[in-house]
Image (cartoon, rainbow, N blue to C red; front, side):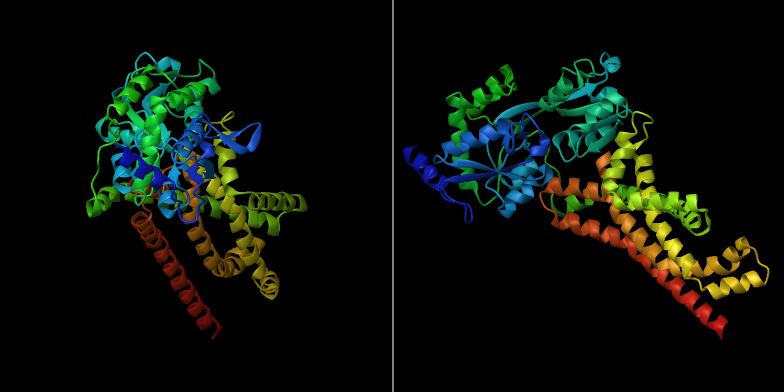
Length: 495
């Protein structure tokens, strides 16, 4: 035993690819907030939280190191640790069979409960997922909770809603956009404190039990073993309990969990092992197909709205009075000068006090109204590109402005606008990925969930790229064919 501990201690002092042997670099997501990791209000350049203190305790226990924090998006922790961006990822990282199969994972150091939150009027009748048939249940994407909801979607018939953060699900629960939220009890309790004690109710019976772990690259099993030894020592000497008490996340259940870990029982991962290899790809194809359908429908409807509004704006700028032209110009410049992501948030969350739009409708409006500004400039340029001598000739023949637009100006402008319109639609297909921030699960979001679950972006990324190409290439070919046909018609007409 003494020899083993000495070996672990020596291994723990080995640096990770150019890192100082006195530094333990760990990655986490400060956007997750307290009590995990958050920017210190007194000094925003520093972070605080129980994972911050656990990382510092681990660093001291493996050769008296100093812990250094690296910011990383929560969903990318696994990929970043395999790239060597840091030694260990810790930020409410959940213990799953897939994670254990692909990485070196520490022993669990905290036990959490997956709990439901519902509105007060539903508290008496909702005791579990089985009571939520046909209801919209929200959670954080690529988590154990999301996997539970995905399975319950088929068995129970509920509607799983995925979010990119753990704050807006509870906000939407209070406003009635969703009927329940399933997340870790720590997150639920934090949200309840923020919203006020009567905003929603946390169901007492947990849906599942899970554990937080540290994740290391699969090649760093020896360092993982050294960290496991440091965690066990922190459990024995009470320092880990003190950390959790300081952050008000300790209860009797954690004490019993520590005892099980120290006796050699590390708990079980909360998610069942799924298919591997080709079978795993096949299993995800229906979800990717549904998400691709959402992307295509959202893009097509948004482009239709953009064309209609864009034509109106272009007509206003070409034919309108000075005031109409000014208003149209202001709209175009404001929309083009502000980020689409900001416009999504304003339409979905900012207008919630006036009108609570469904997520899909809000996505259509944001994409359509944003691209309308760009379409307007395309159409205005195309209309103004028609030679003035043709317009004057048409007026000399006694044609009205409407007739000139329909017979002379419009057809030529359409030819000029077709190529950039096609480019805009392809760009809109890709920009539709942004709507995942307001809970619409489109192709890129579903791919990110797939990649997080399998621990790699290679296969999911290739599949996603192929689907996007399959949707965009035919449109580009059609546009080129129409251009060639119209060009040929124009040449015959000139002859």
